[in-house]
Length: 118
Image (tube, rainbow, N blue to C red; front, side, top):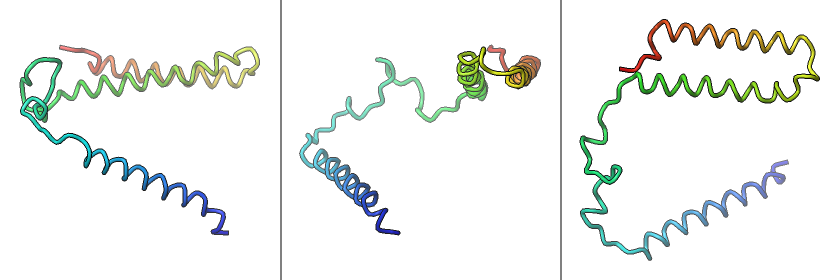
């Protein structure tokens, strides 16, 4: 039974060896001339204003998460809309419940002020 996994293990081993070999060859054969410009951080053509490890406002992450949540909603709506004529009443009700939950979450975030940007 374990013999059936031999081709998979062989593939993983060979691909790992090739990947490591290419990295080592690139490091050995590539030019090693570090300069101050190459080692400095690049930020849109300007000198870095602050340290790269500065703290971001938590609202940035909140807006990003909200965008992902509401963007994934569309991923569920498209397949449903494609087969809209073929599905029964149960699917229509389940999509209404799904959208209702999303609207409740949107209203909650709106009331909490998560969508306000100063």
